[in-house]
Image 1 (tube, rainbow, N blue to C red):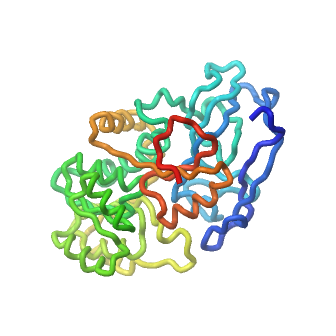
Image 2 (cartoon, rainbow, N blue to C red):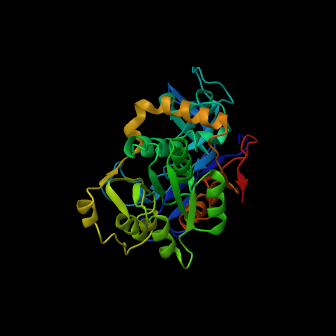
Image 3 (cartoon, rainbow, N blue to C red):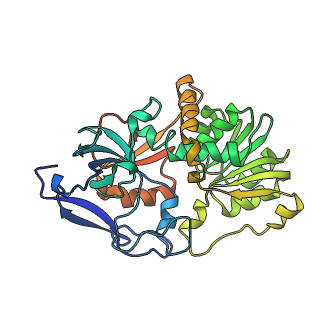
Length: 350
């Protein structure tokens, strides 16, 4: 990278109204190459290797009140990633160290030392696990199902978006805890994978007879609904909830890219069935991250937890296309963008 005079960033060009439009919502901006002279005390210069693509990113583009401020117009798009240290004057970090951080959509970044986590502090696994099963994705699944859902042996757990990065980990943790699990996904291939992960049943919501199949599979009623999708699926789950069911509100991906929100129209079921419906943000549990990672890492080592990654290749310019792909359900498991190739990943590249 040092032979180049510039590096690329992707900035927010306009706030989308509904769908993200490649080449319009974002734009690529070239900036002068960063050098050691640009690095303040207590900071690192890193090069981005992988970016995490997450449904929450769509919310960051809208100028509405949320748990974090929106990305500003003409600002580098926010995003988590894995980077490699290329300059660290006066730091205990050294050239070549891998770190988990929030570089944003950029090939290079200067970050405070306090804002990065050395990869060697994560349980042993793949490099990209720091963005997936051992990263915020896995932690979201872990705390959602254990702390918010309070899953226990014998529970009947239904997971929407079950073949995604978070949902697939939720399904497996629920099984580890002794629950019966129904996973909902968007293709027959994903349904097959969910059964391979150990789900007791899995349904394709695009199937013609899905509504009938859902009612049959949930005839004993739902103890925990882990929602990543919202909309019609949430409405159906409310209809089939047990008294005192726990609804873990993690996401609503079906509603993020639309100007016409759908359902649920039966929120009265929350009252009638005394349902506890609770949202959460994974950073609510920051103080418990290390303990959770150790348990997730142990499950990986024991073979109780499987993961799958979908890697979009082609460099930083592919990030906006990958974000669109996320909402089309192209990925199975964790969706990543390869900004710069590294041999440490075992992801399926597309």
